[in-house]
Length: 136
Image: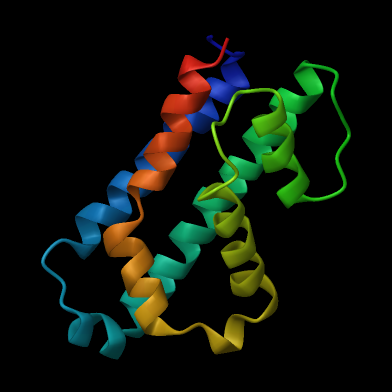
């Protein structure tokens, strides 16, 4: 299903954010990442923005379907599963929890976890894009 232009623009922004992050981290070792404030900060911000887009799109779809409001970002993900837009809460619920860590416990972001997410979990965002694009 093609959702409205706002959702389509946000999906495109999500795809762009993930693409840029992947490009900037290509060939970067964990040692380089850990020692670079710029790379760590860029990655934190890009992941936070990506998850915020996931949450925003989820809230908009719930509103368009007159199925809200919901009380939390985690509830948004659960609602999209209930609506059969997403197959499972995971990995999206974990994304929301990680975003909460970035926002509320920002002084304790483990660079190993951050690096792992950026190197190995970006396709989770593409899975979200595909699920939204394929929703009925």
